[in-house]
Image (cartoon, rainbow, N blue to C red):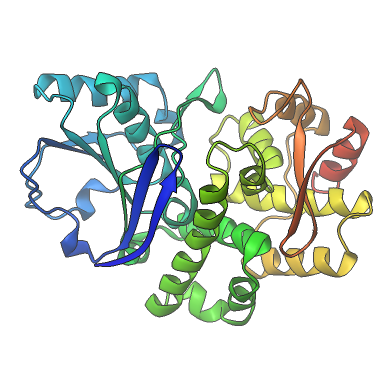
Length: 345
């Protein structure tokens, strides 16, 4: 077990540790509820010393009744405010477990154990909890950081290929935001990344996660720089929404959104052509789709208007002037339509 960060996030604190699988579940003398899903449950040790609640896996189950199952199980067990919820899974499980912890008896202790690459580098850190509501992704949620975030890179070896590649989209995004070494590692070590070489994956995870740690520690409540983490996401969330959250993984949608953001930045004279080419070449190298079918630019525009990141009725887009040089700006509807149309068939 190795501590890599000890962060103060508003009134909360989060300790981030790199752990092995056999260090995950140590008896604590406290009432503990482990929450996981049907994909991850078979990967857990057979002798977990706490009650385990297994939810259905998938974005379509990120909804109120799943949260109710967590809360109901804690009530059935007679747990009081000194209990601990441990969320073990991908972003769906960690988001819902954290949300449930934030409202159960007005807040109980929380430990998160992300098992997907996307969860390790992005979803599980920073305190954003949530459930999807009225077909809108993460529309309802709270800020409630985990007291401990336990990162076990060994879980990456068991991920389905599509989920692993999807998680790399967030790694690429973090490299674009604040880590040139990470960007170069993705470019030069593609073969080892694709083979899931443990040492390379461990470095990817730690570097990508530390990008988010630096940004969120500086701006916990998303008053400024934290919004940069939404690079590619307004486009990606719109794509997920118009396709019912079932056609693309979150990572696939974000990767497509990164292409749109690059095209929009280029058309506005913000993003240098050489940088746009470099980003698209990296996305191509990892097999991310270039164009999607069956949706219209107008549908995507309407979905983007429902994005929770809008301010004063206007949707703000994260764009870049280059690697590590990011800004937030409002965009004309016509510019949005032009950017996404380049990636529709």
